[in-house]
Image (cartoon, rainbow, N blue to C red; front, side, top):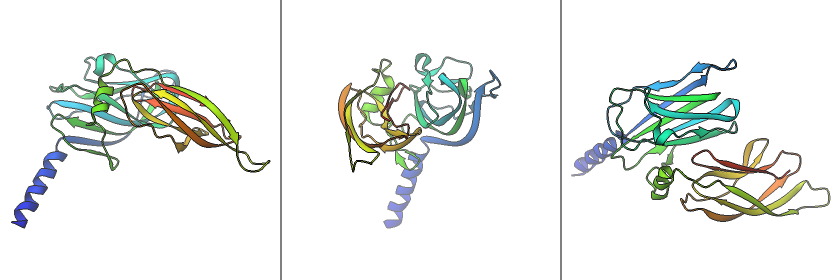
Length: 242
């Protein structure tokens, strides 16, 4: 009986794993303009109904007009021409809702425009998946709010309001506490950054409603400090606090 239960468990786990396809890519793509590399990422995947694709990437060259999109072959880009803009050089995971469309022999193609982008990894989620992992963390692909965010083509622009800055420590201390509010929906990441790197995360649970959440963070002078918020479709607001 114990052997039967173990075998059943293993078969069930294998069935779940078969619903996801993970790629460790490590590949630089670009549009070939202004001396940038000219490459795109392509991969032939199983001819099955695909729910979504998650891609972890980082911009290496380009300005605020840098963006990526995803499609099958030379067909239309997913989500009615969705572009994910990359306005900084941090690592981000971007999401594309494929809506159950099968490749039918066409490769999955990721293109970068006005930029060079380093692509770290990708996960293809097939229809029927009930669980998956990304970097050891539970996927949010199955959360109802996230599904609504991915299907929402009019996500509101995020906004940060600084309410108060208060010095902390002694007279010569360079530290202070900054508090305020973030107004946003479908937030991918929010936090306090120094020299472009995340120093303190601001908790902003995923919600497809446009809501306000208060925050308070500890900041230091002369560190190019910023409060940043990013939404799942690539929008952002950045407020300097140095």
